[in-house]
Amino acid sequence: SQTIHQWPATLVQPVGSPLSLECTVEGTSNPNLYWYRQAAGRGLQLLFYSVGIGQISSEVPQNLSASRPQDRQFILSSKKLLLSDSGFYLCAWSVRGFSYEQYFGPGTRLTVT
Amino acid sequence: RKEVEQDPGPFNVPEGATVAFNCTYSNSASQSFFWYRQDCRKEPKLLMSVYSSGNEDGRFTAQLNRASQYISLLIRDSKLSDSATYLCAVNRNAGNNRKLIWGLGTSLAVNP
Image (cartoon, rainbow over all chains, first blue to last red; front, side, top):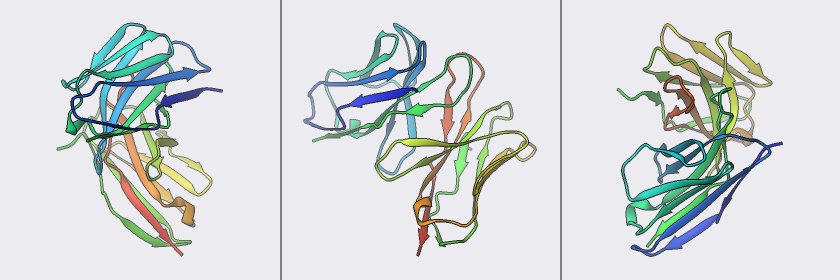
């Protein structure tokens, strides 16, 4: 069966510090991968999605970036965090070319202080 | 108008009650519809896909109304454990990226 991992689970970082969040998927090949952010009391905001290694599409211009160095690995980064980057970061995957159903990892709760 | 809209609630219902949520969408070309459940401080989990003919899974029934562009979720015999936020999701467009547009969620509290 498929499993999606995210780490760390929680993170407290000062403004201006760098960020690296990692997501890995097991049990499937060639998935579509997604990074979302959910701010307190707000909906899911799609940040990036990827249909393959090295292929990243950005939904919202901001100080975040994403990379997909391996088929089942998706990384979210920032060089300098802002207070507004606080939120619940969720990685998700879907089967390419089959269904729109997305499956989420456990998320990383980021607080920028 | 937002692409996907939900009544935020909260819906407060007693155990055993029947409760229904609606979710409206603006893109008439949308073909895929889903209900997700999100517990507090947890990730969303797929509850049901919504098919044209409607579908039922135990106490949960999902319906699609294309003419009026909304989907619905009916929960019968509510349990305390049904307390959560229910998110609807609709595909934005065709293609390989498989992007979904999300509602803000409807909060449900089932009370003893």
